[in-house]
Length: 248
Ligand code: ADP
Image 1 (cartoon, rainbow, N blue to C red):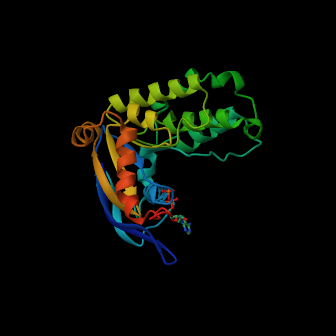
Image 2 (cartoon, rainbow, N blue to C red):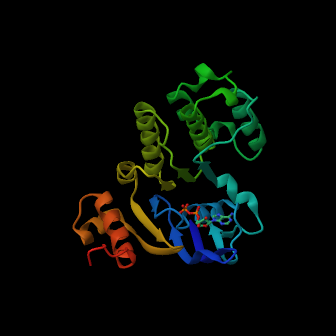
Image 3 (cartoon, rainbow, N blue to C red):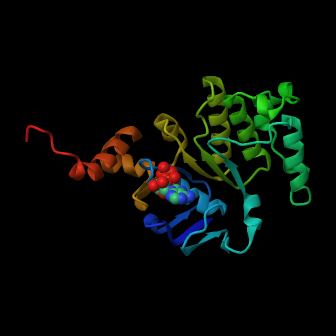
């Protein structure tokens, strides 16, 4: 469904992605994990067309994304922080987005689950500039799912949500995953990743260290918890360069 072929990206002298070769399939829910600065966001932005790789190609449903932006209608993206025109109301934003997509998408395909479950209609006339961080997150989630996309990219989706909202969103992610959609997730809340993901993609220094099914990883590492596996992955890479204690 998505294929990265030898993607590399350098910012100045800093190589941020090195020869990334990777295929994501329908029905996978992939947790993208790695230390800060390891290249996760750059990888996601490359897929969204917000960063242009120096080398390599990305294919969505066998279509090279380089010269044709139509693939973007297949993707629902929930950013970590949504930036919206402050003077628009939630209603106006939703209507504007559906108007833009008119002709591309049948109105019967619109998915209002999140809008209903988060009861956003009750605050439809509120201006986006007046919303709390958590409510903005809810609006971002509503937009990501609205057009019933085959691919969902969710960047820290539950961060800033209260426990009930977080549960509602996770249920929705489950539902879409079970429909066979491809879900790419980042989160610092490892228990969320554990609940939602089928695969772990671990990136370090712009390289793929590991891309495996969670169940297989748990067997190989003889660990039942994802957090333990990630801690071990990080230690393996980090320990040689850790400073020696002063008493050695
Ligand atoms: P992550 O999401 O894993 O924290 P990023 O992909 O955001 O990592 O960043 C990887 C590295 O690339 C970091 O060192 C970051 O400073 C650098 N970087 C990201 N975007 C830019 C940019 N536009 N210009 C220069 N350096 C960048």
